[in-house]
Image (cartoon, rainbow, N blue to C red; front, side, top):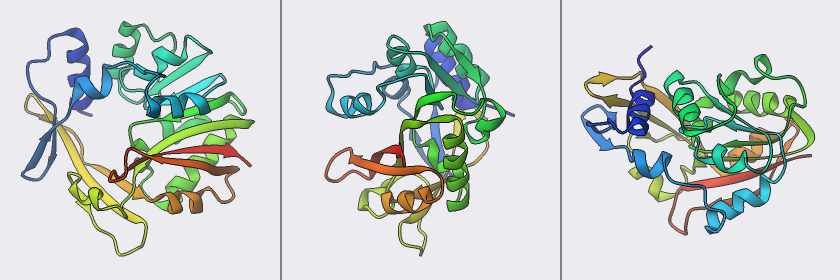
Length: 239
């Protein structure tokens, strides 16, 4: 399987990326902000980062879809942190940047990778929650996450709220007649290499709350980027 996304971030980390990483939906394109999204620092003085740090305050931590390791580098100085990525290029990048425990693995197949009650906190930041694909897929993911976390665990996830007007400006946005749901379809292109199409399901906070039923989780708090933003973070706690 081609991996232009992981390869572009790997090349950027090495200092030899000469081409943009492009998001594409048909003829529509946008350049993906690699440096801004993946190579900054987690700053607990920033209000949005502080909100996460207040809830991810104990380990071991599972950082799912850890990217280039930005958050893992911060949290591993405080407690054991396992950084999980499906891309071999991103695992290599994290190791080069000093992430102590960077592993290849799929966040949607957690029971096959970790034992029950392995983690006391979990983080999935990067809107990859939408790759669950459906309400059923979201419930299954939350149930699996509950299995590999302790009874007192906390988690922070993020998504785009399709009920906010700004969601319609997302590249690849697809409307849905069901309240609180939409799709996003896009793929990455780098140096002439095109990745597989990615199908994201967008869930409003109310739909996320609905999906937690029977999984052991409850939505404790929701924070939007700003008053107009469709991007939100949700803090989960065990019931």
